[in-house]
Image 1 (cartoon, rainbow, N blue to C red):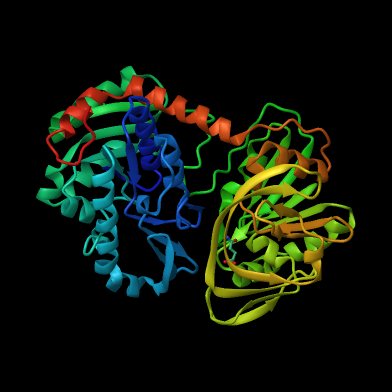
Image 2: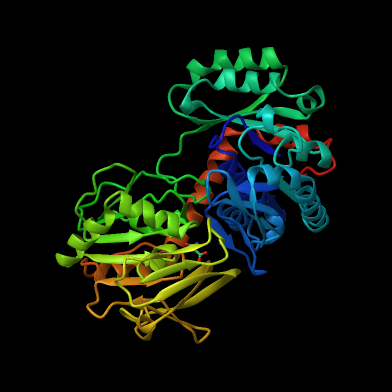
Length: 486
Ligand SMILES: NC(=O)CC[C@H](N)C(=O)O
């Protein structure tokens, strides 16, 4: 099990990389994250919902994403409440306090998945969440040591040296563990190192002497690695090309599936930026309203930040607006949440540029889809994750025709505003080219994001092979019953 000294230490990436390394050696490996808190989710083959990072790790392992890989997913819809997803399906909307009470039940779901995975796979790579040293969360923990102790798995600790304080993080985390928890830590991995490794050596020696545990390796900072393993928005852009199109998206407080925007962010000729709260909104050719876990509240935020006036001006000058899922719902006349699925029950007026209304229902639509765009007959594939059901005149001009016979989304009569429920739409190079051309960049050369992801997983696995003492790591873990063995 990989646990981190902080959030974003590189746990997901290390699990993805190890999964690829072991898969390349012919092993059937499953990724597993007992509990994930993320608004960036993926649809599994069995029609459920898991964290995107686990879907990426499944890809790295060469296995189909399954709900058992992430049996508990928490999707926060406010600062104190979250939608609790168990085995891929919505269980309930719970406050943090109620979730704490519910944890022993969630643990049963975790263990049921875990037992199926150890039965069906040669090895399971487990990822913790945040840090195991959050002592206030230790009681009833199911995400870190609480799971490791019950399932009796060995642990490696990863720390991010780029943030600084790496020795304090590792030694401090060890100090805050109980004796039995400490005893299951096999050693450390240091992540995102740049610089002269010779200068680090004395620190590593000190760490090993102080803790009596080995450093299995120091992973280099991998520049330009594109993996949607992380839950946080990646603000970095690809550079070096000539800008032919400017695109922006607001960082909605409850933005969901932000990786939908990665193909724009990574395109060398697109100048893409996320615009955060209080930041000036720069001029753009294309504005993409992303998905949202709390559409009514995020719409209010958008107005409060002045985006409605900005968008009106943008459209007057012929700019394009694309809404994805929650962003699509915002483009209609009304968004209704009669059951309070995303906050207080209520309704709010949308931006009104598409003649449609949306009602959030109790039942979540989860499916993988394929089809084509109506802008030009470009192929696409993607996935749907939404509660909303949308109706109205605008649907007679759909944006997408799905292979299952359904139409999805809409384009306004003047062709400036479009929206769809399909996430991941721009991952397909044809669909991306069509969107770029609609937004004003003709004959765009687009990259296959899927191929790029594969290449980056191999690059990550290569780095792990050369910088991690895998033999020692596997050897150290071999005394535990559930460890990958060669
Ligand atoms: N993924 C999304 O953007 C979901 C939109 C909205 N929250 C719904 O559930 O319908």
